[in-house]
Amino acid sequence: AKSAGESRIVNHSSLARVPMKSLERKYMEKKGGDLGGDEHGTMMEGPRWRRYQQSKLANVVFTLALSKRLSAAGSKVKAVSCAPGASSTGLLQTTQSTGELSWVMQMSKPLYAALYVQSAEDGTMPLLTCMYDPSVQS
Image 1 (spheres, rainbow, N blue to C red):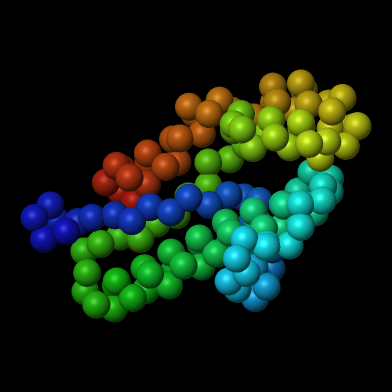
Image 2: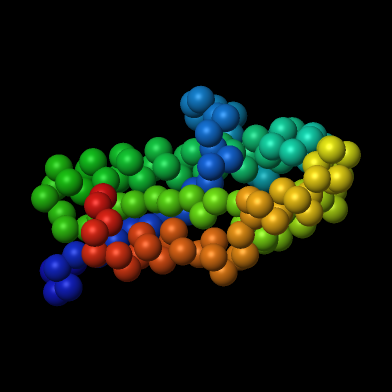
């Protein structure tokens, strides 16, 4: 930050965090890899999705706290987070292959994908914006 005028810390989040109203202690404890089971739920439900949602919420909470501390210290380092939106990545394929899409979602997936899911490459745009756009604020 001293030589370039600013630096950035960019954390990756997800809109999947929205159903989570608060961080749950059980997801933040050290458990030696036992994070609450792998049984499958439906799309955006079940222990695997709750862990994912909690981790993405934790990224946002951490970034907000870091931003406040950096600002209070007079730092030129910006702390930002972003969510790429629905992108055609391994997460979507894994959700389908494990049976976590309801039969309605299975049937409507081609239409849903055509209307709402972007390519993985396009999903990088929010990250790139946070990294390089000069107008981004902490």
